[in-house]
Length: 176
Image (cartoon, rainbow, N blue to C red; front, side, top):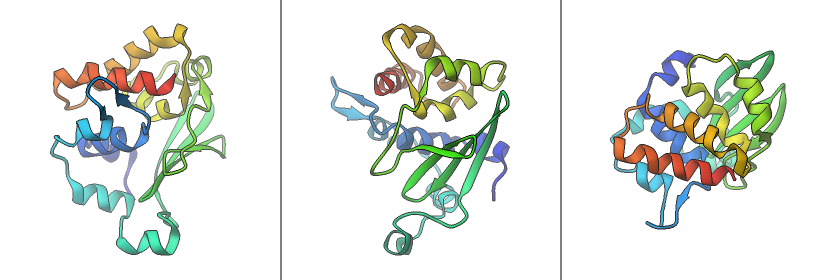
């Protein structure tokens, strides 16, 4: 098991997280999805495979789910938010109830931006906002504030500056 600090301070984690947790993040102009854009980054595949407990057998035996997945648990202003990382899926829980996932049959956008704002109020590490974002649903009025949050969080990661705006745009469009 990994500590939350060990996970969030690992750039390989963030490349992996961004690649798989925004399945609708796509740039129509370049015909590129977020995982294709992030493919050019060198990240530690071995660490990712160990973190998600990847094995060839897990898909045949358990459809990509492990019994004891690595998790990130966040306290969001009195609410429990848990993310489970499986080889074939990332599963999200809010106050003990499964609310969504990003695997093959993904379920996204379960938290409106107002609730997201309330839940994340006072959180100092802006990277934590990215962990919740796959479950957020935006409307057009939310775009400026959401764009600022995503861009600010991405700027803390080891990403090429020219990719930060493109990734921000992909994520925002995927949440509409």
